[in-house]
Length: 433
Image 1 (spheres, rainbow, N blue to C red):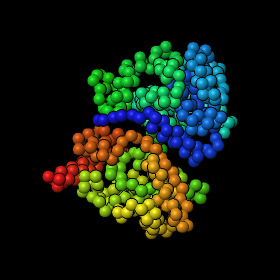
Image 2: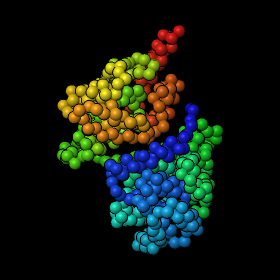
Image 3: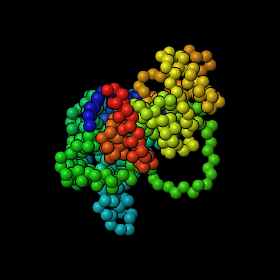
């Protein structure tokens, strides 16, 4: 798989994402970041400082007794010029150990400080009008190298879809001291680095995550095993659904009708994330399936009816799905009229929020249209994948790569979808001869 990473672009998109998060989930609030002196907390604190301003970031240093590398954490807060607190958690951890009527297991002992640190961060946050930043990265999360309800918790997570190498690259773009970027991560308890304990390097893990390439068979088996064993940490807590009705008050939501326009060829978790964001903000979400008249072509292999069915499989009746055929116009105002006309036809009212995954400003679709005032929410990519790359997984019969980016509810449809994509591809190649 071809893979490249633009650290400057990723940094800029993440900064915008943080600003959007605080605009919608805590306007005027502070970002509260636990500072260890390592790359992850350093990069998250620096991203928040750029996004919100350094006066809106609070660093919290939390040694457990003596911390040999606390000077690194102090270097970071001084470098950024952010307000910070030092809270020694030794008495809290020791107090809980003394209160328990049994000897803690090794895993309990290791995971206790991270959970007390998270309690500390929320105590600071709730007393300072804050939102707690999660500082995990994709590489560590992939193999479960985090503490559930400890460092894996938080209110927003800037780096959980970035590998170790990518976090480091962003750190350099942010101008962080090299000693913070390259500081070897460790749990601070065992005297070993993370890589020593894992048994493989982050460089090896990062390459495997992004490309699927790895030479050491034993390391591959270990990574796969750890990933399977720890997937539960990345999922919402399972809950029993009684099926009983629940009254939902929707008047408090920020927007009435939100619209998303996309072709969904093919549907993946990035689309899912964007739609769920829209659902959180809007009383109703209208998903327009664009180019709905297209099917059986290489770029548009799926019919509107199939795309509608796939969306319904994931979202049920929680969204409104409607076709939006192409009209072949380049005039933005005309296109805006067309979108609004169809929204009114489907929902009986005009939209007041456009949700888009495209970086270019799309609100200009509606500029100059009388009686229309539509806000725009740009949601940066949560997964770095394109529609053509998704379709290539089918062409290569790479089901494992496809599954990584697709909701489990759609997995049983793989053979059917692959057949349609291959048919469309063959038709395209035949017609070009």
